[in-house]
Image (cartoon, rainbow, N blue to C red):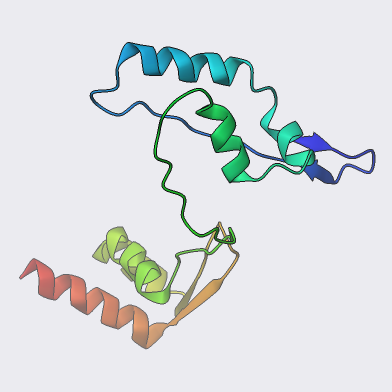
Length: 136
């Protein structure tokens, strides 16, 4: 990651290269050589190189068919949902949920995105009932 004086990100990049089964030693040596001469990925990004241009540098001097896909915007999307949080409640078991039920409600907060999930007394009772039904 290249950082500006104001601590904002100037450029960032990374790569992962994995040899597939059956790759011959000469191919791997050429890729290793190309990678060692590549320099900083973040600097290449800062210079304006995109993924395709970097891939061509990695596989320079080789006859390979690169299958490039349409670029996609990377976004953070938390996978939490009320259903997943309910599953987490179920994992607590009847005894612990019964203790929580004494408070009359529960609030669970996703540690990744901060979403809060409220469960009232009736909903907690329904979770406890579902556990008891599964145990029967």
